[in-house]
Image (cartoon, rainbow, N blue to C red; front, side, top):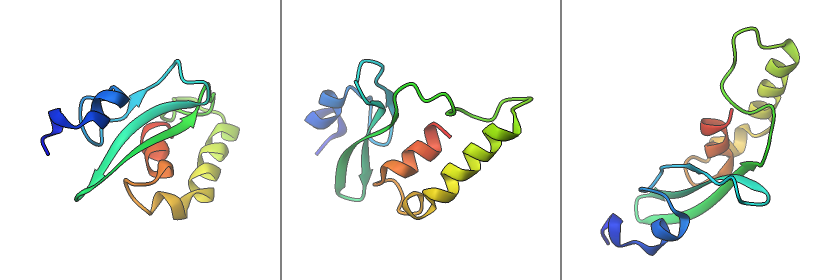
Length: 96
């Protein structure tokens, strides 16, 4: 199956597999990705809409924000380790 022919890509509005995209109009989730590992393909929505703690570390970031970031990574470590087929992996990669 060619990438351009897969209806899941068009339905999600992404340009290709494993290419996350913001979804500002979605009521709850902030991003979507069509994940592909081998022959397995899965549409994953992830991230809290409007999360203020997300994003890469900023210069002068407060200690509280650093702790929130570390807590997220520790709390979801098992799920992040599952790889590209888990929402936690994508949230860690894109938002945190």
